[in-house]
Amino acid sequence: MGKRAVIIDVSDDRISENRDLKDYIERHTSKSVLHMVEGELLVVIKDVQKGEHLTEGVRMLAGEIARQLGKLKIDQANVSTEILDRVFSDVDTNKVVTAFVEGWHLGNYDYVKHQSKEARYKTELHIDGDKVETEVEQGKRRAAAMSFSRDLMNDTPKDLNPTTFPKRLQDELAGTAADVKVFDKAQLEEMELNGLLTVGQGSEHEPALVEISYQGDASKPLVALVGKGVTYDTGGINLKQGRHLSDMRMDMGGAAAVAGAIKLLAESEAKVNVVALFLIVENMPDSKAILPGDVIRYKNGKTVQIGNTDAEGRLILADGLIRAGELGADYVVNIATLTGAIANALGSKLAGVFGNEELAYRMKQLGDENGDHNWPMPLVDAYENYLDSDYADFNNISNKGEAGSITAGLFLRRFVPESCKWLHVDMAGVMSSKEAGYYVSSATGFGARLLADYAEAVSK
Ligand code: BES
Ligand code: ZN
Ligand code: ZN
Image (cartoon, rainbow, N blue to C red):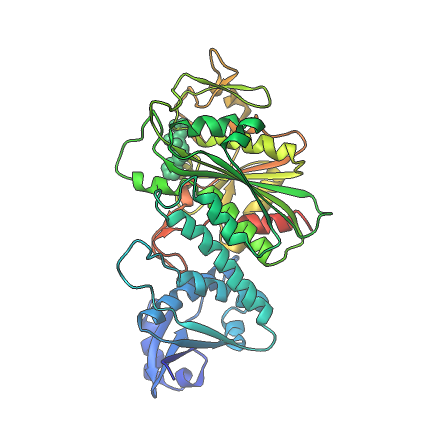
């Protein structure tokens, strides 16, 4: 038998009856303490904070313990529902189990494809308790969906590009009830996805639109999820400068979120009616690339001056919004690593949500619960004229050096079909993180859970 650990809390006899050990544990500032007692490795959960959004506490703790035990090359850890119930007494048992499993697997996540080091040692988790299988499975599915988003984001632009990305989506969804359609450049021309085609002009890879529909219940309102899939953002002719350009391989983070969400919904056979739209393109400077000053004419007749080729995300999402209308969507959510300004406004722990105010608040509540934290942001009518253009209907950048995330939202609002209830999620600030709890260094996988839970929430 391999090495084992048992997860307990401070009320366990082995702790409560041993004063020295009790003191030792109390002196630790961490949320859990590892200790050998009579040849058995104990993981002692100390008192956890009581608060409003406890399931996140469960996930964070589980992720941390998983990594600690992995480092010690422990094969298996056991925890009982009784202990989880006692420690997290404010949260429903079912939710605790799902969150613990989810956090455990996410904490174990690693991405070593491009490294010579070995993969992380992964300690297996056993939850002892009656009838928890469904919750355990759901925890695994949520972690797998988010890990898929992380994998896509962490990959390099050489391996994940507009040629390979559609195939990756097809492979991942094969075997589920989701139907994957890939549209190539010729089809995009026919469909007049002129934003996507224009942004893609400078790349050796042709842009692509991927549409994945999943009808868990066709009678439900149609929810369209639209993701920005810029596999690399050089800025185009308005070439980016600075030292952190490596992160621009994650400029498909919105598409990765949508990919994780549709995987989660399909694999958990959710009773929803969803279409996922992926706008996939590489933003490159080249003699064929679009020039600042050029104009795009969209399918809905609107014309846009390219004030800056680096504001490419909104140009492709505009096509996605128009398409969502054509497909008859009742709800549309677009998600994107859209503006650096959102990180200035909200930092690296919250995404910004714009659009329908009631739904934005609903989104915030879902994030509080599932860990994809976000906050409603305003669309200020008085800033509309910041997008004025002298020779097109409007510009893709603001003529004022302020409210960069809001003006991006205002730009998108001009393309929202009248029949759709709309939200726009700007996740540029939250795409990557440092190691903490169930987060590991690099891509977060933000948005997969959020979009899946949102689709379910509006389908109730
Ligand atoms: N992909 C970037 C936004 C971004 C910045 C994401 C930092 C993640 C981290 C986007 O395409 C962009 O370049 N936006 C510009 C817009 C500007 C030119 C109006 C920005 O935010 O600076
Ligand atoms: Zn850009
Ligand atoms: Zn971008």
